[in-house]
Every structure is written in C-alpha cells, then in structure tokens.
Image 1 (tube, rainbow, N blue to C red):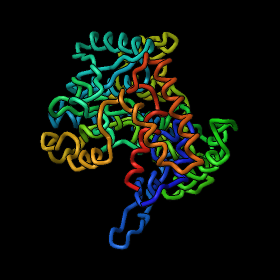
Image 2: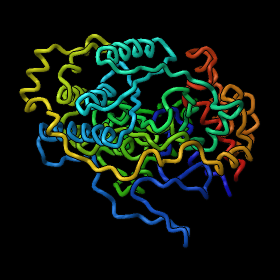
Image 3: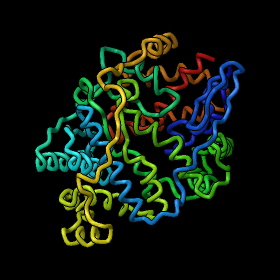
Image 4: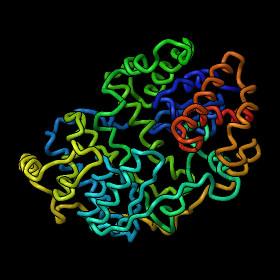
Length: 431
C-alpha cells in the first residue's frame, strides 16, 4: 500500500473542514471512505455511484411556516418512538439553542430523559449551571460526566486507533463513566448547523476554502491547493457539481455532520442520534438562515421551555415575544399531532463496545497507551511522511502541544485537532 500525499496535504490545514473525512480518500491510497450515496463493488474493486438522493439543502417550494412545523413534528416523533420502544434517552445538554430544542421534543413526547454535560473550561462550566437549572425545573435526572483517558488501563489510544484515527481528528471517545449505561440512546443537538448560521457559509466551496487558507507558514501553497481540490472531489463523489453555489454547506451536510455528531461514542455504541440533522429542518433553513429557526422549533414544542434562561442572557426570550411568534407559526404543537413512527427491532439486541478485530489491528501497528502518552511517540511517526510533509506536521505537533498547555492545563484529550492529526500518522505503518 502507499501513502496518499494529496490527502495528507489537504488535511494539514487547520480548520473544521479538515477535522474529518472530506471525500472518499484517506491517508492511504488503497483505503477508501464511502460517503453517503456511494456503494462499493468488491468484485471489481471499483466504486460505483448509486442514484443520488436530492440534496437536503434546497428550496422545496413550501412556505417556511409549514417546514418548521414539520421539522418540529419530526423531532417530536423521534422522541416519542424512543419512548414507545422503552429506550432510556441520554441527552447531552448545554446552555445553548440546539440541545434545548431536543429537550423540548422530549418534554412534549414525555420521553424518559437523563441529561449530562462535561466541563473542560469556564464556558462549559456555565453550560453545566444552565443544564442543572433546566433539569431541576423539569424534574429530570442529571449526571456529571467523568471523563477518563481510557475505558481501561492503557487502552485509550487502542480504542481511538481502531475507529476514529485518520477519519475524525479528535482524541475520542473520551470514555465517560456515566452516560453510556445499558441500552441508553445518546442524543445531542449536533447537526443543527445544517440549517442555521455557523462557520459553514452558504457559499461556493472555493470561497470557503480561500477564507480559511490565508497564505503563510501554516498554509503552504501545496496545502492550499490540495485543500481546495479535496473539497471539490468531495462534492463530485456525492453527485454534486464542484462549483455548486452552496457547496460549503453541502460539505457540512455530507461529511462533517454525521462524523462529528457520532464521534464521542463511535466505538462504544451505535445507538446515537442527532435528530436536528433532519431534512425538514434543512429545507426550512434554506429559507430562514438565522438562529431564529432553532428558537422557533423550541417554542413550537414547548413554549414554557422557550422562555427559560440561556447561558447568554441576551438570548433569553420573553413570554410575550414567544406568544407573538407562535401566533405567526400556527400555535404550539399538540401531543395528539405527533405522527407515529414505527420501530423495528430492539435496542437491547444491539451489540455494544468496540470491534475486537479493529482493536487487534490498532494494537498491531502500535496504538497503545493513554492519550497523554501520544506526544511521546508522535516523533517516531513523522519519518513515515514524505520529506516535504515532515516540517508541516512538525508544526501541527507544536501547535497541538501549545493548545493543550495554554487552554487545558496540559490535558491532551480536549486539546483540539492538531495532535490527533499527527497521531493518525501511525496508520501509515499499514502502507
């Protein structure tokens, strides 16, 4: 097997677009990632495009009021179906907009919900205060997540190397001790960016790429060129034109959304849902490109929750403002309006835990130890890179250590994308 230099150059740019797969290429030329809308013909070892589904980011021709109500009903239906299936829902709750909309659906659907959050910095500490206040108001259980570097002695990097290494640049899963008990379904608010404002603009991929790659020592010309190319390829393999006018948003919907949402629990449980990443919400967002979309969703599902304080006091809505807006949207959703959604199978039959085969492969190429040990062996893998890439990844290594020490007191696990990018180079031992 051989090293894919184009992919390595593209992923060396430090921006959210490069913290996960950007197309079907990986760090190794002979290993491919299959994006949505593709299948693989193992007999001929070629990739064939299935008939692409219509993109979710489009003007459906329907009015915003109808679409946002349908998005609310869809979200409530998901929560109700989990209740019908007797699933215990674990909600990652923060002080912001997105997870509150999921909580609103849970309240309307009378789902059994336990909430949690985790604290790495002052902002997350404020999130915890808001989450605790909300769960107290609605008499819901709350659990603090105790984040460990491993689920067992010395195996954090093995677990990570067997799943996310080279696919998603974060030292995850963190191995929280509480939220992933037996048969819990993990929900979060990740995915709402498919509709509302975020760092992913409604713009051509080229425009986005240029805004994220100012020339300089951290973005060599080759890296800029390959970053641009990688995004264009990502759009084409998903059945879109490289110059699609909202290509940057499509890249989020196709690649970022699912991988980012599932990354904390990817090897621990497949029972993970990001219900805000819905077709109806995406279509509504095509018309209403503001945070009002999420607050509309929350007030339709639970007007009372919509007026509860946010971490940022400027976001808090008054009762009169909510009532006025609801009159424009057709009034709150009633429990009797929620459409029934069938559930096939049982969550209790789902196999949990990492793949033993994947763990053995990860161990065989040297993914061993805990996250804090990664910086000690990263230097051993820089020599696996072609010579022109070595100084680029050495700078990423230095950037990661600086971030870990500056913002997280030397803790490696929450330090961002740089160190995982460099640690993933151990995969090149396969080549």
